[in-house]
Amino acid sequence: MTAISEYAPYAVGKYITYQLDSFRYLPFSTRGITITYQVKYLVDAVITDNLGRPAYRIFRYIRKNANDTWKQDNTVMAINTGTSLEFIENNLRFISLQQPIRQLYSWMGNSYINTSQNDPAEPDFKYLEGWEYMYDSVNAPLKLGNITLDSTLKVAQRDENIGTPGFYNEVNFGVEYYAKGIGLVYKKLLHTEYQPPAGSGSGYYSDASKGITFTMIDHN
Image (cartoon, rainbow, N blue to C red):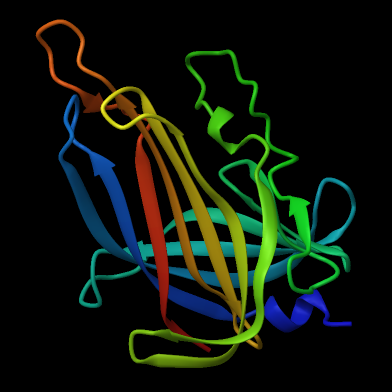
């Protein structure tokens, strides 16, 4: 049986650097903009989580481009339970990988996330409800720019289109790729909510509409 650690080989000192493309729409508009950064996830230490389990503490660093100095902007955590990989970022716990690693195996990857938040002052994660992650391809090659990877694992998370174009429309998409011996090498997440014209106004995408894409550019 393929071990989760083959595709998520966390170890103190290990890092992966990504190009981060952050997408959003301008307020009350259908025009989108993308801002590009570089981010580095560096495994800092092995600690104990609040359930008493060994966990990897990971510092995230960010900079605008390679000429800038890295600045730490977040701390995340990864827990390899032996049967799953839990990844915690911004207080959201995702089940990123799950045993057994085989073609078309599926699981509820967002089951730890509270998607019924009723407080308007809190972020609304309703769109993450019911996401069924699935291994879409196992041990497949992948090319990222000028980087060729021999063995990757594709986790298809969501590909959903709700409503009708021109009227209310919602798009939810998520996918991740993991490379053997490296870890997460590509991630794309997109959530959009289109609000149709009302009266003499124009249609627009809500403030909740956003997307991120991580593409690995370096690792050790």
